[in-house]
Length: 117
Length: 112
Image 1 (cartoon, rainbow over the protein chains, first blue to last red):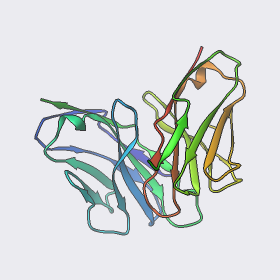
Image 2: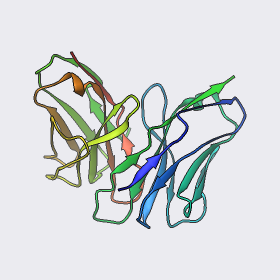
Image 3: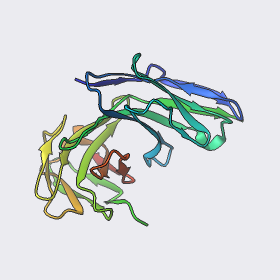
Image 4: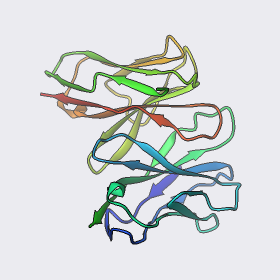
């Protein structure tokens, strides 16, 4: 069975600095997707970034980027130039790829990120 | 705005009461999901649907029922609420492509 592990329950960063959130996963599949979701106090679940396993290039979305190490099954999120609005719970998630399956999300337990002014 | 709409946003139930949570999406997505989120336990899948008229059990289906009579709607029912069902419930949908899921804003349910 697939699993997702986030080993950092809490982290903090100074405003304008860079922080990296860790995520490891376990799967025997070759076709899958990885996601980072942000959940601010409003509790809305917001997609931050996604990575397709067959793509070697690391995904980037503005100040957010990932370090995808497929062999090591590692998928870390880097937030550059941290802003107060980045303070939230961040979840790493895995989904099997391919058509014809349910592709349900497997979730990590989350990392609570505090941004200090 | 296109997206996933959940109703209600908050609800307090007495033990033994029943209720239905409604999830509606206007993106023509095939797949829909119901999750519950509890402190320290992340999100857990309750039930899901891979298309109109289909439903399947997730990790924690006991005490819940679902229906997908129309493609855009996915209903979650609690027949006899228990305090253990106090949680935040999220509905999500996705297309058949590998895009990320779209989530509703959640329903905070308290069972007393």
